[in-house]
Amino acid sequence: ADKKMWGGRFSEGTAASVEEYTESQSYDRVLYEEDIQGSMAHARMLARQGILTSDEAEEIVQGLGRVRDEIEAGEFVWKRELEDVHMNIESRLTELIGPLGGKLHTGRSRNDQVCLDFRLYVARRLDEWKDLLATLVSVLADKADDNREVLLPGCTHFQPAQPVSLAHHLLAYAQMFKRDHQRVEGCIGRTRISPLGAAALAGTTYPLDPAFVAEELGMNGAFANSLDAVSDRDFAIEAVFTASLTMAHLSRLCEEFVIWANPAFGFLDLPDAFATGSSIMPQKKNPDVAELMRGKTGRVYGALTTLMTLIKGLPLAYNRDMQEDKEPFFDADRTVRASLSIMADMLEEMGFNEDPMREALSKGFLNATELADYLVGKGLPFRDAHHVSGAAVGYAERAGKGLEDLTLDELRSFSELIEEDVMETLQYETAVARREAPGGTGPESVDRQIMDLTDWLDSL
Ligand code: ARG
Image (cartoon, rainbow, N blue to C red; front, top):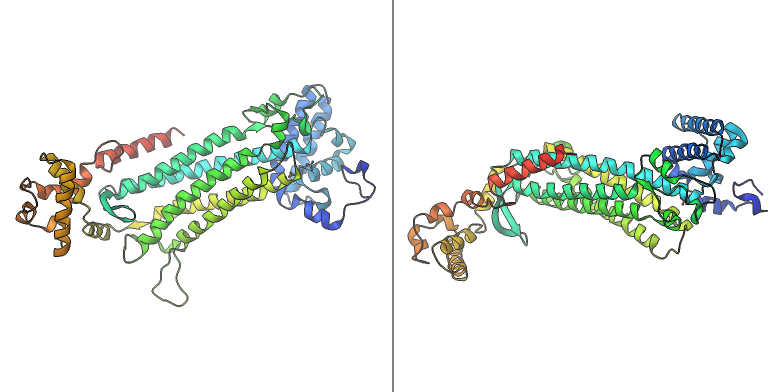
């Protein structure tokens, strides 16, 4: 039998295939910093509670510091037979400081430890997501500020509907990423809960002080129920859900960029640094970054599905299945961070083309609603006004013109109520300028939106 930490009741060693199948040290070693911090806090708490002497705790803390130095210097020898990051570190600690190392695990289980490490790790990554989201909101607000005068067709069903400013369009995305930021914030609050002291599942007989450990680690508090403490992976699932929604938002924006970059639209010029060419077609400038981001959204949803499926049939409390919780999070974290950062960089460089956008406004009768509203202003019931405007659209379409290209006489043939002032009404700029109700595309409303976002960013 080999000498596993848990090997007391075993007489034969683990099969090599099983060792390979069950190990997690190959990927959970990234939790080393959190593991060491958690162990240091646990040791200090044990001393405060009189379970260790303060000299013992001090020696353990120093030993853990040496282990950290070894890991960071790349000198640490990771051992597969020691399964995971927790036992690798504890085993090395005991090599360094002797049998005293064995006292560290008093009143603690790996079940508490792995959950603590993962919570600390996830919370730190979520802090980074928050920063990246705030940066993206700020870039969108700046771009909006630069493009307040630029108008483009607002669509429903991807059909031209009403004119909006590009600023307003970009600010819609800023709102999505602001909500993502708030979701991450909420998730951090629930993630920063320490499970240390759950002692595998039932709570402990030692006079531990979980609240002290939680405070030492900068967490919001300790667990309320020991079974829940070691079984709960909500925080990771919620984090990956938040990442999924962020990717969905990024993906929608990417989709618009892909469409806008098509020469039939020509709404934007991809910065060279964010586009790629074709090996056969010399003219090509492809929006690969936007396409890949749209594609990578799928793998983040995949991580969410993995985690939701992982947890669904598990009885309380810890089950080894839960070791599978880490890689999906790591992958989602890598993907969402890279995507947020590259989207902000790409947006900063992106050039929007005012003329093709303006040109597109004249196709699709985006001022038909204005004509109907104009007639309502002259006393016609909206349903009738809608009909009159529709008839004028039909006429203009057959003539191959826009409503604004019709003569006053032509327009008046649809309603006697139409007068000279209709020409002003049919201008796209007028349509946008009149939408000053809160949250609308009017220039003052857009200014207010930018100001509110700036205030929010300043408050972070
Ligand atoms: N490597 C394990 C995990 O990631 C740590 C906890 C193991 N606990 C146990 N009793 N086997 O979940």
